[in-house]
Amino acid sequence: MMEFLYFPEDKSLYIPAIISLTIFFIGALVAMYFFKKASKKEEAKWEQKYKNMKD
Image 1 (cartoon, rainbow, N blue to C red):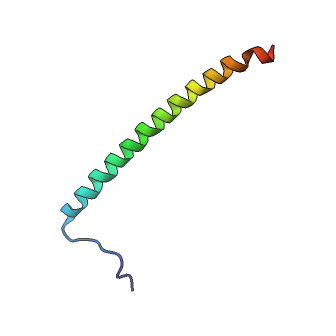
Image 2: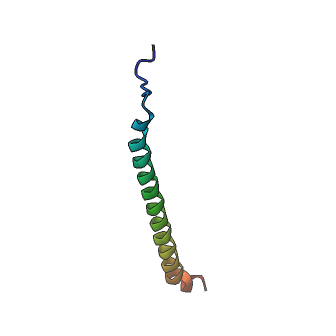
């Protein structure tokens, strides 16, 4: 019935999957850090540009 699920008996086959998952997770965290950093820089630039219009 659920023949599409495959769980290998040899658990060492999970090692490449765990390594690639870890690499992509770390990459996602690094990308999120750079996006957040760029966003704060853009916000500061926007605040500086439109600060004079408030007053």
